[in-house]
Image (cartoon, rainbow, N blue to C red):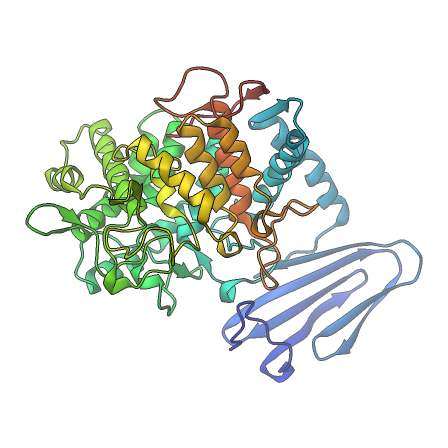
Amino acid sequence: GSPGILAADWNHPERHSTRLEAGGEGFARLERTLDGDHYSCAVAWKGGARFEPAGPHRFVLRPAADRIEVVYAFAPGTAQPHAGDVFAASQAHWPRFWSGGGAVELEARDARVAELERRIILSQYLTAIQCAGTMPPQETGLTCNSWFGKFHLEMHWWHAAHFPLWGRPQLLERSLPWYRKILPQARQIARRQGYEGVRWPKMVGPEGRDSPSAIGPFLIWQQPHFIAMAELCRGAKTGRKWLGQYADLVFESAEFMASFAAWDGQRFVLGPPVIPAQENHPPKETWNPTFELEYWHYGLGIAQRWRAMLGLQPNPRWERVRAGLSALPVRDGVYLAHENCPQTYTARNRDHPSMLGALGVLPGSKADAAVMRRTLDKVLAVWQWPDTWGWDYPMMAMTAARLGDPEGAVHALMLDTAKNRWLPNGHTWQRANLPLYLPSNGGLLAACALMAAGWRGGPRRPAPGFPQDWTVRQDGLGALL
């Protein structure tokens, strides 16, 4: 019931309940009820202490001595926890984590090296604890409730696509079965709108219901994400088992993409209505967004390769759409946000410069490198940095790297702006009600993997995305598709 983005209301204690359900020597369990939500909080301690109520929803643990061991466990149902078990599990887990994935070491006479390494290390930790659960994460992870407690599927790639690139595909795999869980809802959305396959929603909770929004129903760039992430995991595995496990979700995702593209007599068009990743465009006046056109071409191509690997014939409809997609829109020698964009980087040079992702995040099969070079230069010259988001900087870095500009890639990663300010704990503050933003961390790791390990079809020299006078040592990193 809170109108605020954090969805927190501390002024109505009568609307929820906290009950001491069980207790004893060294243990207490609280039962919480808020509307239809029920969960427990278990408290266990060693050492003399009293656990006492101090208000309707407030309890205080008062130790009798200077030292106490205490564990708090939150879950739908909780067993009695022990501090020793928590410490032992942590001591066993983290050495496995740090020795089991990829690593990169940078060396240069450049003041940015130490800071970039710090961001890389902290981002691995933060995404491991916040972005590797059984559902896609919130953009603030488990630290605070953002966007009314919902997660955004267009951000799932930015949170977790780096895991396979850093030798930890299992951390991305944990959340992929959730898409099967919400398959009925995604299929219903597509049918209700007159499309085939499944249309993945935008802003949802665990049950997969799309939230009321003036943007969400028109956004489409989350649709190929599942295909891209499944392919990243497949690239880290061998055998047909993985293909068989997720092929139906890949194919149903592609089926929607093919049915969404409309034939105008000469070409296939995306929208209207549509809102691109750069969300400040009116949906009824927007069509053929640059990034989404490239992503449609890329995603349908992966789906066809999966069919071939399973011994199936290519889907002729998907191929017609893929081959007949509109060209990426260009005006004044640079790529536009979308084909009907009324101006070239004047009034609308804010939010995400998403057109850059068509050659950077994606391989740019439909893109022209010279046009994208001019586009990147234009963005760097005129974009409104206070209105950007933390993943925009690694997106620019990936574009610069693929364009053969390693210095530009490092410059983009380290650009000194308020939205790219990295705190001592590795978080990137975005605004007062978003004190952290994990797509920044996941994006940085994806960009650094591309810069250190390269990309398919890229230069064969080591670390092609870093300046040649840097020494870059990497182990266990994979190339971006």
